[in-house]
Image (cartoon, rainbow, N blue to C red; front, side, top):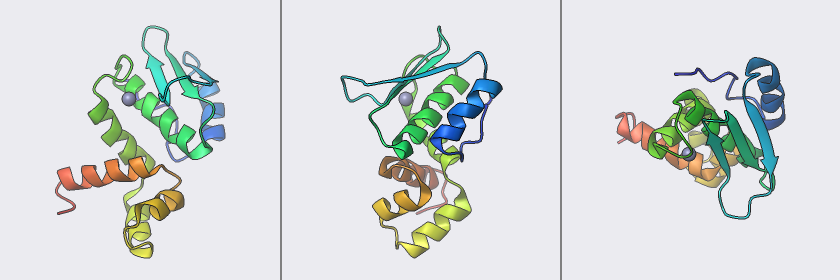
Length: 136
Ligand SMILES: [Zn+2]
């Protein structure tokens, strides 16, 4: 397994900048996708493609998602469920999540905005909490 080369709590710009030095073999490119795919990882080319038309928050989540596929050496979106749960765990800190949940009474859109993630990542984090027995 290739460890995540950057701190997943960085914003998108600084994360991409850090990757130049911390993961020199990896290529990250962005372009406008024609389909609704947000990103993809090619193991053979060690390249991540990110849809440039998304918000910075969504780009940040997508980049971490693709870095997790790289970490596990998945090809494309192989083993997607494992990737999503791990991505949510890397993007969200348990203490920040608990605080946001209390402040926003569990409202996922406001929590997502507060935590700088997409609502889908909030859903994935809740699934992780549920599966690990931390949430009933
Ligand atoms: Zn995926």
